[in-house]
Length: 591
Image (cartoon, rainbow, N blue to C red; front, side):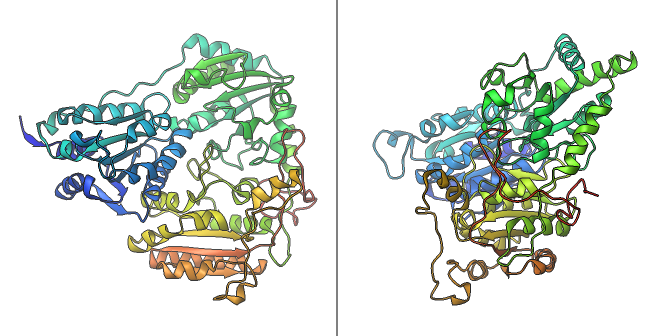
């Protein structure tokens, strides 16, 4: 049996499990692992400027492409605690990433050694497994279990903590005979599929809710075929956006309190049966539950059994991987179609399509400073169907979801449940690293952009090109809007007179200078008619220089974006589009 250091065995296992990309920051307690990576040579490494940034890069890398598992690496102590936000973001959205941390020697773990912290206990609530490996001989089994857990059931992150002496200890291990553990995914039964489809066919106005579990399962094509076979409209969640293209006739809008379309809410409210697949009934989607559920029958399919009934009890629940369930649903649907047992839902689908056509929000404004709606209109024109958007929480994200268009799966990459500020930039680097030949566009408000601004240097150093649109109103816009309920505007203004950049006229941080100082390119836009040229120039520069290119758009200071607490009472602050000129890039144009 070959003998090698435990870290050399770990790197060999990473190769066998398909890991080829790491993001991290070396340090004394993890240097043995770095020496193993260097000797192996098959794992590319991107040096982050902050370990939290590395965890978000790994997150973006995983989300960008089916089968990817991002790897982030850090030393002992604060490196692990810095990763907790990244682990939380991945755990909340069911994203498998592997975090490796160094640790003090085993004999020092209870002696308050330098940078020794019980990171496994800290990380446990936001991981599928968090383990400090105390015996070198356990390293291969722990890594095998980590990949098994990350891929099985509801996907999620794992943290493995490696004391420095464990890393260096020699063990017997044969890489050639290593085989990944089989992946387990719960599957629906034929009887369950028949009951669910027959419940749907008994309804007059059914809709599918397409959640992120469909994307995780790679079942997007099956979903579209199922909808087309039955003629039933689809309402994607924010995490499932792109599973069916925005311009598909059966895509009838997103529903919810914030990241939603007016027609999406209207179509859901008009339905009598809601068939959720791979979704969580998240509160920003449902809003007040009595409004959401009243008068409707619910079917819920989720890979995690404890999700069934967690938010509200459905009329029928199925614990199943979305892909496995959709395969059976399709089988039953085809049989029912062949037996002429499928009602004609064309009239219902046409009603939904008419709402989609007539309930568009206005985007075409010529105001200076620029209104955010116009920014997204111009982004739709500039970046086309194949763009991949990356964003996190904020008014920028909410407005983006209301006005941008997504035509493919994994083309809207979003920190949905956790929504940490600062996630966007490093996640975009991870996405761009995963799909280097594709157009990647990050979307941030000014505060999100400032949170992890230093990671721009990573893109400059490692030639990771993407476009970062920063909509700058010099405000914590979403928090300011929520403070309206308290009749205050308190500690949310980011504006100040920058003594080094008086041309900013009180907008505070000079994002253009900051980006350029970090080795990137940047453009500032003040007039709406200049947006299209700026986006085209930014795309060209990102391709030419292979660095992040920032497009800072100076917005009006205060814009209220549509939102509410109930899906039948979303407050609209701007007028409805009444002609194609009001919303020229809408997916369903008015006459």
